[in-house]
Image (cartoon, rainbow, N blue to C red; front, side, top):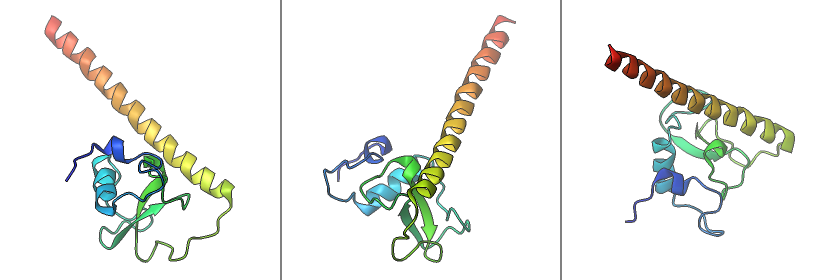
Length: 119
């Protein structure tokens, strides 16, 4: 079995029109930091992969979430594009803030190390 880094899997239409292997997609989501619990009710069993924009070829990190069988819609919901856009933008903003915080934390740690080494 080929091993892929999660960044290679969580992309748009990696397989040119074919759906990504479910197990590979689930592993990539978990390794990328997506919480392995239902986004709505926080339970961590009977989870489905949900594509926020309902496009199963769009496996970008900000378009994926885990939903339990109760919260995951059976037939795709007919949602207005604006509501999909707002949800994706909110998730992208959270990811960006988290990444900025990680960079800032690393910078502060490096500065503290420099100070400690100079003493």
